[in-house]
Length: 484
Ligand code: NAD
Ligand code: 6OD
Image 1 (cartoon, rainbow, N blue to C red):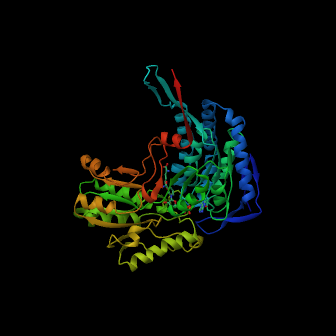
Image 2 (image 1 turned 120 degrees about the horizontal axis):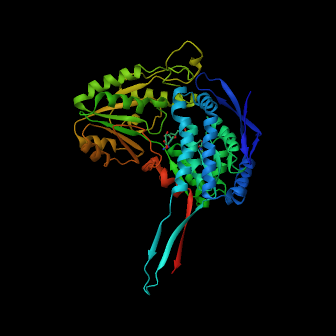
């Protein structure tokens, strides 16, 4: 059986303990994974610190940027390998991994390489009382060793979204990918070697959160900053762990995102966009819409059209090009999603479609598939309307006025993303500006420009990444004031 190892100082390192990496499509074990203990996490942090003082720390911005482009080249060279690894780990359709996850990983390196090379710095000429004046300018320095902790839903995309700007700014990293999806982070170590990124710059430790590699990393006194994507509750635990050493954090957390569909929308486009927003990656995208508010004039037609979309999804084997709905990530996550399917009924929902588990009569019955599901009829106070489920499911509710829609959409402790569907652009702008979230799409969803701010309000996160926001998080600014 294949062994997925830690990667420390350019070497692949086994662990004392191993755990299983399971294929969610049929429940088979695809590999064993070496769990890093406290000693290995310590070693990874130590070599990352040493690499800051070595060749990597001496490179200029242009050379670092060139190195990151080579990492992108190396990802593209191993494209099929990355796609197959992501498909086996997550169960996501091969079409999705090859159109979204792996191309975005390469793009993350290219965009931040270019951005750091082309970005300037602020400077101010400051008037002084004696008229001699002073010049203020800021220089960008790396934070140091950055701990990167990532989830399982878009494993390589989200890991590289953080690793690329961290390296662009001259940091070194110790990454702890999700225990559910360890393979692409490990493959990325090979791409780093192809690109001749010096040893110790990119290190991987495998394991779990509490009392394992995740916690050892966040508690480590020699880690200078932590960047994390995952559940809001985990963010809270990490905040506690970093408090004693006052590490800066960037948190991209959960969501309970709303979509508002006005009667004047382009109906076909809205239905098709919302079908993606609800079901893409089996609903396991933090930006997915789990609450859909539809103007009453088109409510029945919209629910019927969404039902048809849900029922036309093809929950097949992940490697079948026709598959557009994979399994959930794990047995445990399926239990969670199914518990919400049950709860929705207890809370009085009308089941428009789904609500259960599909039957295949083959090995997929040992996997973690669920039916795409649409509910209506729940009160806004229902737990299924308030809590993140993270599956292929939404609740659709009618509204009668713009004010009512805005008020329902904003009635949440989360604040990640929203989408507005209308052909009245004036209204699109007006409603978008009232959304208490980090990202609002109008007549589209998950359309990304990597230069834009990305992050959430409330329980959905702390800070923004993307473009200059990433460069600002992953660097320490030293303002220099020179008397002229
Ligand atoms: P999770 O929080 O359970 O795990 C994420 C990572 O944190 C894993 O690597 C895990 O091992 C680690 N971890 C868990 N407990 C830890 C601890 N105490 N200390 C240190 N590390 C710890 O999240 P998940 O289930 O992997 O991912 C799904 C969640 O992620 C959803 O809530 C989703 O909305 C969120 N998410 C948010 C974004 C975003 O950009 N806002 C993107 C993707 C996913
Ligand atoms: O596109 C991105 O940069 C990003 N961070 C997406 C997050 C998706 C959440 O699952």
